[in-house]
Length: 263
Image (cartoon, rainbow, N blue to C red; front, side, top):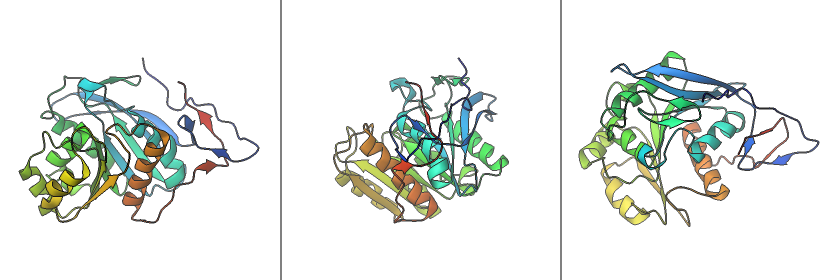
């Protein structure tokens, strides 16, 4: 089933409304497709601010064999909110063989190997669309793709840096971290206190190989960032990093048109 991302029905309330999990704020949304170097058609969505584009998030989702896809909740909420709240374009897509309500990308899951071409194709799409200040955002399995391939050409030449959510460091090895260190590109690493795979103290040790890595422990959080408190924290950290505004505070209320996402 293909969904129409522009089909949300907006209404303007009499007073500012609290931004909730299903709140959708105005943006220019479109279904997109692009093709990898090995000939696979990948599907996704691009959400653009209605005004100036101040930065671009190229998102890499969690492990598809464990339920990860472009609609994984932090990324879905990023597309609902960050174009309006922070002027950020949000590019979400399904890696090879991954399905979501948007559709299914061609190919089959390749354990993070063939997915190098998926990452490169997404970045190339953003470049061809003229999207500025491009940052990679990886979550769980997506962090492995960022760490393994984000500091290598051609991707490294086209992105400013990366933000990682819940990096397990299963597939990414020390030589991948060393490549990031050599690139000099900024890396913000958000590590849940109660993560199932890598917790803050160990993350500090592992990421010490990258002098420019900023490792932040998130108290009370788990690997999947469940709950509005933690999803909002992730969006706050991402926006502040990409915009270079450490003191940025995203609004928690919205006074303009709003829609409600279907359950």
